[in-house]
Image (cartoon, rainbow, N blue to C red; front, side):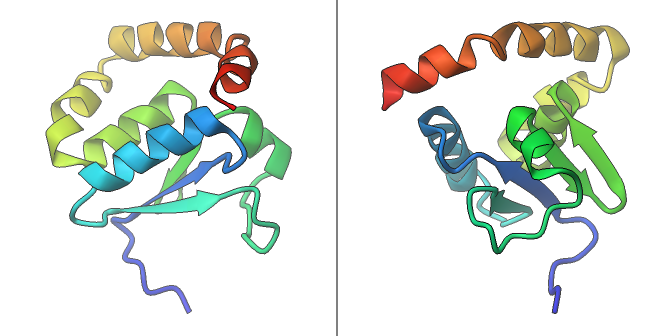
Length: 119
């Protein structure tokens, strides 16, 4: 049974990534109201709305029926946390979201190197 309301944000993350684990731990601490449901994709028992590898390769979040990916998913997560909400709202502006997406795409090729350093 799903006891989460429609205003809960679901965030899928790579539980095998030390960088991701650190970021999710920080977001959990800041999410005092428990408005985010974090799903570890390395747990095979977890259901996935999309291909699991796609979710592992690129950050995704869902609120209601809307699935966000990349920078938009980060912005949705920030909006769920009061201290980060202004940043998430700012990211609704198309030029800001575009810039964040460019930065995120630039980060993706570097992510495996950072993961190795943190292991």
